[in-house]
Length: 164
Image (cartoon, rainbow, N blue to C red):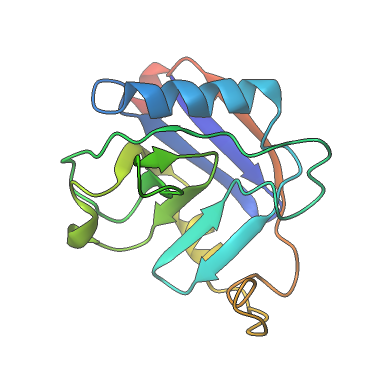
């Protein structure tokens, strides 16, 4: 399977790592298929470093509540385009709906975070999102884009031969 993250600034397509992170892949696909991510905002942007999305505390979240499940630290290389779950609990280690798209290498995250996918198209869109001006006010929203960037929808489909 692959997912298309349609944002207000363009689309990002990713492949999954089901053998390395089966719980995270299933959780992400289930949330995407249920519409959980639809309408949420990109919550953090760090220029040319990473972007963060999937936090129901940002945007028009309706009745969405945080989802938590066990972390699966992976030994995959953390390179530009790697999609990881942002850890939300230290003990026991846990993930949630919040994910990050890395825009450069992060070797210190190897074995510390759950890498569940890799961007195969649209890394330029993620980089463009990372360049948006941020509020810089309170510590909770210091890296929140001044102008909202919405996840319009995430669709999951079988991989096509063209994207394999």
